Amino acid sequence: MRIRDGGNLLIALATVGCAANPPVEQLASSERAIAAAVAEDAEALAPRDLHLARFKLDLSRRWLAAGDHEPARWLAEQAQIDAELARLKAAAAKSGKAPAR
Amino acid sequence: VNPGVRCGILAVAAVVLGACAFVPRPNPRLDEARTALERASADSRIAVDGAAELAIAAEGLRHAIAAHDGLDDPARVDHLAYVAKQRVAIATEAARLRASRQVEGLLVTSSADPTCAGGKCRGDASVAGRRITVFPGGRSTSP
Image (cartoon, rainbow over all chains, first blue to last red; front, side, top):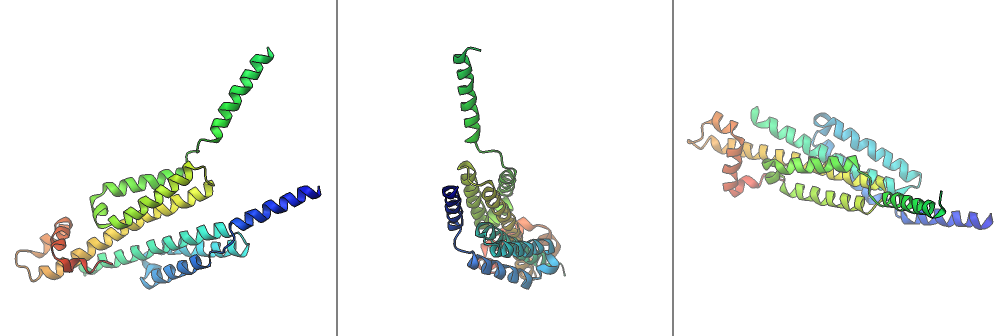
């Protein structure tokens, strides 16, 4: 029984060890991407993508708080890319409208 | 049943089941990303104006396929496929943004160009795109 517990502990440690470094930098770049999208008026012009980015950033922080770094990293990466798409959509929408006026 | 026959049946079953375990299951997210990339690449406007972004998307899809073929964690394959799909969407938007900025640039120059009657140029985006690439200044508005 003791040996089995030790084995389980080892497996648990190995699993945690694999995803050791928390995606702090990734979270920071996701935040910057969201800020850039907001600056491009994505709030009004690409609300769905911006919402998705914020939702995933929030989820990512929760996984991070729970100590599970791999899904936290994935979600932060997705939040960044969703925010980049939101920024481009907003920029394209603005640029498309401008000559018509 | 003859023990030899039974043993043979078990061996065949083991091989069949074993083979199944080593064949990647179809992944709908991966298929979505692949379809999106193929569709975007077939669109000449995206293939030209979003070439750089499309190349990054293709690289992302290759990562996802490699992870899938390598029997990686399906959740990771899903993640990589999602990123690839979003990169295709980014390429599409980047191409649209560049095209509209080129049209904008043309409209500014068209007022000074007597050969270009406003409405005609405005409607013909592909002509506009080709015209502007002639002038290096037209590119400078792209990000």
